[in-house]
Amino acid sequence: MNLLEARGITKRFGARTVLDGVDLLVCERETVVIIGASGSGKTTLLRCLNRLETPDAGSTRIADVTLGQRSDGRAADERELARQRTLFGFVFQRFNLFPHLTALRNVALGPRRVLGVTPREAERRAAVELTRLGLADHLHKRPSQLSGGQQQRVAIARALAMDPRVMLFDEPTSALDPELVQEVLDAMRQLASEGMTMVVVTHEMRFARHAADRVLFMADGRIVEEGPPAGLFSAPRDARLQRFLRHLEPAS
Image (cartoon, rainbow, N blue to C red):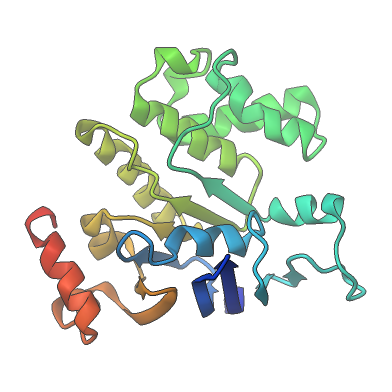
């Protein structure tokens, strides 16, 4: 069953069309990985899915909610749109943690302020998610006391604590030193194995090969090829995908 359905997503910045009528369907419990060269529209697509960017055309539906639209069909106001965005968890390239707060309080902040849960319940949720990601011994440390990989896992826990239906990851390992990448990818593989629905933009081809149910290749603002990773990587049809994979071959 499709949990996430985007139709005709189009986005322009000035005269440049960054997304050109993109359709995307994601099933519940599916891990979809989006690959492609820089500038192909991957990050913009993620940001349009949860309306961090407003598309010029197209619609996104998650479960029974159409983003940016109220149940009566009228346009959602900012308060309603903010509520709708909580259906998504978003993990950015940079961790964006509050430096003066502990890991526990960074994660508890969203449930308390956005979802309105009690401080006690927010910290309980935060502790559960941090423990889930192997950070039980680091609850009371501030970001400066954590490695980059640990900080990114805190950021993942922060998104999970909001109880999202779909997790969006935008190059979550690109800001990490190479030796720290694996711990974040392992955490993401764990979430995939637990059935979290995920859409992941990444250049980590090993993750795409082994953790994805489906891989999408974007070029020129469109999805030009998609399929199970085994077939897409072993027998790519599109010439642009062939060139992309040849370029990455030494690192993949």
